[in-house]
Image 1 (cartoon, rainbow, N blue to C red):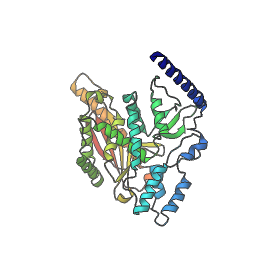
Image 2 (cartoon, rainbow, N blue to C red):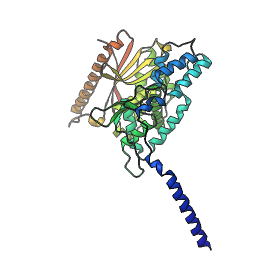
Image 3 (tube, rainbow, N blue to C red):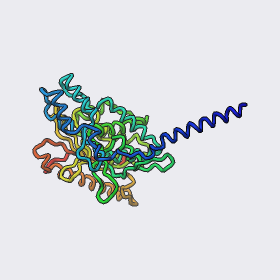
Length: 380
């Protein structure tokens, strides 16, 4: 009796499953419209739509440079190489305009709390399959501001999880967007869409660093160091903080530490400042500055801060048989790094965009976890 009952249940379930399969089998011929250019502008607000929203919500109190602010922080999304225009994050735009309409001033933070969901997505992706590989990919994206990859359309849990899979997932979740197709290739150059998403990436990296119990950021000391550089034009306290963070790294971590990590470290500290907007790998006349910090509109008395960073691994310093010759080799490597950083900053300062502007430019060189050079570079 029991076996017949079981057999009857099994037959019933097989019949139901077969009917369900027949009902849903057509879904196997679905079409992926993610990168279809006809739908590119559907996933956000166009410039014209944002301008119309502004007219309807705050017509009588238009802030100076509002469209520039909204563009820098909320625009930049492109989902197709043939998309007609980049679109704004609709949620973020509505958050900003609602706050201004209700309180007659800009929100103190330009990152809507709803972006916490993006933070959570990033955290889950980081832990997926290859955490260390994912972290290195993330550092590359933050360091350069972009990455190159094919966009993978299909995934399998049994296939090897490669960097292009991670980058593709970041794209499909809106954490990266298309900058441009790579010439004569099926790959794309993918970039962080805007300043809000860039802050989210840096926040996430700071969270990863502070998870290590060996390093806990002292907020008061960070803010004191930021005040020193803004008011006195000195980066001494800031580089000491960077040294402290590097001291906390394990030997294993220090082996993989590179110049991009040094840049990320400096940028993380500046996230504590409400006076500056961060620009990483900022392009001026086909030149790329490591880090530039522009004073926000209400802190225009501050200088633009410009940094060129050089990192020399201790293992990369040539070693000779005697201590004296080894010291000479180290000094030569440092001198070359200092000269390179100084010349780059002088070229950056000479471009038309910075003509007549107040600039504090700093050349910083590290050997291992020691800052061996910190200097303010004057214009020629």
